[in-house]
Image 1: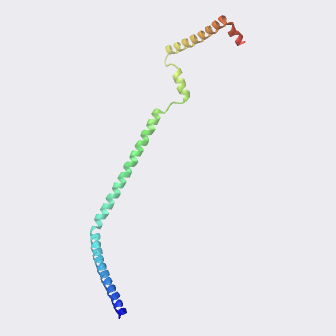
Image 2 (image 1 turned 60 degrees about the horizontal axis):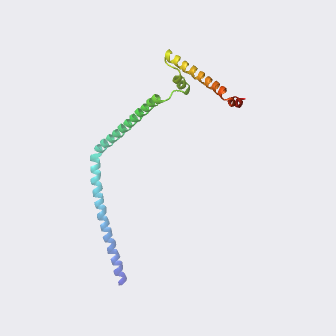
Image 3 (image 1 turned 135 degrees about the horizontal axis):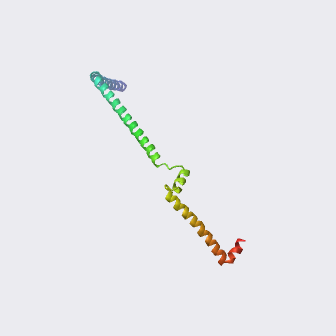
Length: 136
């Protein structure tokens, strides 16, 4: 008898679970059908939103590419402006005067420096005989 009651309780529990499961399934089916009708009605709206989203993404990608291209062009331009001339040209430009008078002044200073160095050498040779011995 105890066993029959236990079996009866299990059977009742199973039927309750089954009925609650059927209720859940029915509720789920009703919501799915409502969602399906809603989806069918809003399908064009969703398609429009998707197309708008893709268009916005393409526009952003295009603008980003334009910014990168402009940045690259600007960097190339700045690099060309600031790039130093080859070393030979730099040395040549810094030492060659732009006009004839400056060239004459450079030659005068150069000759004056050579004569001053020669005079100093002879002065040391005449005053200090040790300097001559050290050179020999």
